Image (cartoon, rainbow, N blue to C red; front, side, top):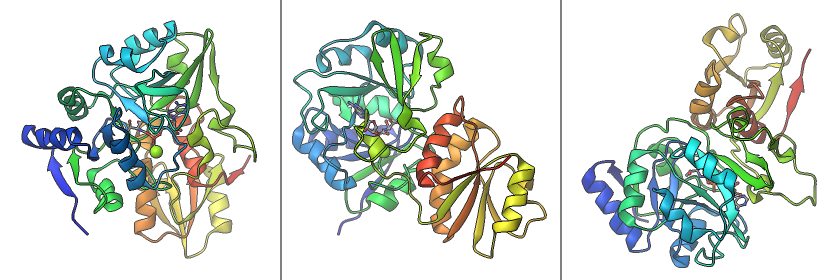
Length: 339
Ligand code: TXA
Ligand code: MG
C-alpha cells in the first residue's frame, strides 16, 4: 500500500494537483461545503476511479464543478430561466442545480441519468484547481460510501489513504454540510437535498419552492428517488443515535430516565447536560454552527467509541433543515418526539 500525499493549499501544491488531475487521477480537494474527490468529469476512466475509491454505487450520479459561468454551456442541453437567477444570486457557493445534460457528460458521471448536477464552489483553492485544469471536475464528498462527509483533510486521509494519490489541505470546511441540491419544474424549484442555501432564501427567487418528501421522510420500499443519493444509507457512525425532539427540560428528563454508563449526549451548549451523569459532545447553539460541526461530531462519536447517543433535535427550517436531514440519516430515522 502507498501513502496518500498531503499537499498544502499553496501555489506549488495546486500545480501538483492540477498535474495529477490532467493525467486522469483522483485528488481530494477542499470546498466550502465538504471535501470532494475530484477527477475530470469528461474522462470516463478518471471518473470510474472516483467510484472505486469511494465504493460508491454506479447509479449514484456525481456533481460537476465549474469555476466560471461560461463553463456550463457545453455541459447542459438547456438552462432554465430560474437557473440563471439562482446562479446570479447564489454562485459561487453551496448550490447545485440539476439540468438536462449534453452528450459530452459521460454516463458514468451522470449515473446513467439524462440530467447533470452543476455547482460553482466558492473555495479559493477549488476555484484555482478547476480554473487551471480548464475542464469541469466531478466530485462527490470525499468519504468512503456510507460514512460521514469529510470537513477536514484529516478526515479525507482517514478514509482515502492508499486509495488516491493526493489530498489538498484547504482547512476546515466553512459550511460543513454538502450543497443544497435543486431541480426545476416549470416555475417551481424543488429541493432534493437541503443545504446552506435555505428554502427561505430560494423563495426570494420564486415563491414556488417545494421541499421534496425525501428530505425528511424515509423513502418507502420500492419508491423511486428523485435523487439517487436519497435511497442510500448515509453518514452512519457506529453508535446508535436517537434524536430527541422536544424542549431542553423534556430532553433532560428523557436522558435521566433512559441513559446508562454508555450514553453520550449530542447537545447544543455546554450546560445542556448539567446535573446529568452522562458524557456529552457539543455541536453548537446556532444552525450554522451545527452545520459546521455536525460531520466532525459524528466522526468524533466513533473515535470515543460511543454506543448509545441521544441528540438534541436541530431546527427544521433555515440551515437547520440541512442539519436535521443529515442527522436523521445518521440516526436511521429514529426520533422520539416529546411534548
Ligand atoms: O457540497 C457538495 O455538493 C459536495 C462538494 C464536494 O461539492 N459534493 C457532494 O457530492 O455532496 P455527493 O456525490 O456526495 O452528493 C451528491 C448528491 C447525491 O445525493 C446525488 O444522488 C445527487 O446529489 N445528485 C447528483 N446528480 C444528480 C442528478 N442528476 N439528479 C438527481 N440527483 C443528483
Ligand atoms: Mg456524499
